[in-house]
Image (cartoon, rainbow, N blue to C red; front, side, top):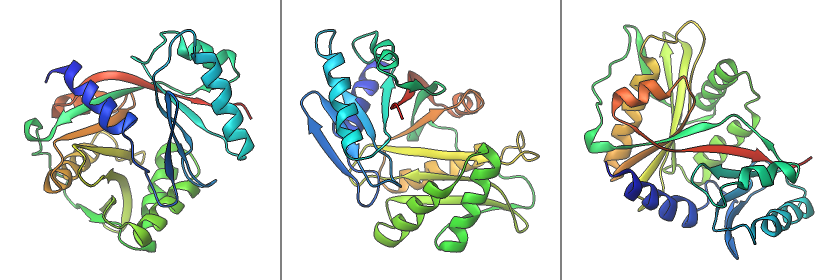
Length: 258
């Protein structure tokens, strides 16, 4: 994989050329900034910017004022290759709080190792109704220790309004949900996003996460996507590298001042 070329393609298609990630959200291009504006249950934030030392501080202040006027907490999604090189420091100085850094990983579907199987007694089912969504949320809350209210809203709204844009999956051991994940599909896009992959304690290290990556890759391939993108935690990166993903950059959410 030509890392520089693929990263530039990702920036152009999925950041500068972003499309709304859910019902009710909209993409706005304001000067050198691309942002998503959603309701209080959706994701609000800056996806892309083309800034330098002379324009960065003003752009940060303008976005903070805009979202504050709309009563929205938001994220500035900073990538390791964004400019200026001290943009993270400028965000911190403006009162933003950085969350843990993740690795932007991309895999070319045709070159991935997708033969990963599930442990005996485990099966994968799609979440196609409220009951399925509740299983996904249950895994999310247990695996990550965070509230799943926004995820529930996002999945239920997506099922009702755009059922083909997000495919959520849950792995069941008998009737027990042990892992869950989703793949987000944008019509006509070359990239599909893998999100929310988590496994409950006691089932980690048994190949369930790996199998869910492979399962989602096959779904993306069936929809004509060439690449898969993941914001990977340190625990996921080795698994993804073994499957054929490449680390292209880093990404850090900077959360707006309260």
